[in-house]
Amino acid sequence: MSEIVLLDGGMGQELVRRSGDEPTPLWATRVMIDHPGLVRAIHADYFAAGATIATTNTYAIHHDRLLRYDLDDRFEELHRMALDEAKAARDAHGSGRIAGSIGPLGASYRPDLHPPNAEAVGKYAEVAHLLAPEVDLILCETAASLAGARSVLEGALAGGKPVWLAVTVDDEDGTKLRSGEPVAEVCAIAADGASALLANCSAPEAMAAALEQLAPAGLPFGAYANAFTQITKEFLRIGATVDELEPRRDMGPQAYAEFALSWVDMGATIVGGCCETGPDHIAAIARALKAAGHEIV
Image (cartoon, rainbow, N blue to C red; front, side, top):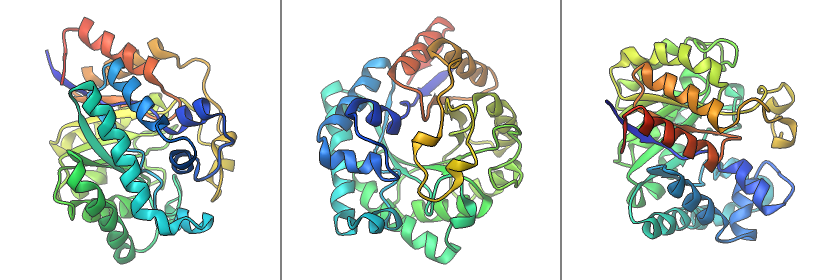
């Protein structure tokens, strides 16, 4: 059978759930200041569940986010804090890799807020240089448009580590990016240096169509979906929080694991979870993969 990389699951919602704090657009970053060690605990739980990669809690550490909260002077420090939390969990577990997360500039799911290429590449490269010395790979997450995918890949490659490019697709039509552009056109962008190609933070039902579009790139490919009812119009406003997204009641660990196994059946070799999935979801995927005869690597 296949060797499968098992990613971890969502970080942001787990932090909200465990911290008890009210979510804000900077919640996952602020938690590292207010609740040191909590991110490490979540990484540890994902490793214990069977994940082989810890994704750093750096998705939203961008100047455009930090400036709104007078925290931009802590840009490098916050990256260091997130890296240290992931490394501590990995070292305690005794194995595993670390993926340095780079989320989109502007806002998630809002390609209209993404800066021009020349500006974006420099900002992504700045993050990549901070992450690269401490990670095994850089994971560019939730690219919502072709321009966003192109910019983040170019910037991330400046770090000199393998780059996995993940795009977010329309919940109802997985052949389209959130921008409405064809997912298939991401393959040409990925040819400029990506080491793997993924679909993320979209409905599980949309992933099969997305993977059909990504597979022809000839790279390792996979998916990690969210468990939201949908990405609401309210959320697509700058500054929206997870209060405006509802978790699905029909996407428990077993149901989600069945989706993950269906992606593996399509040839995916990288699976995991995104928002509103937790350690129980990853554990269910691990059990299902082993029962099907796959090796988790």
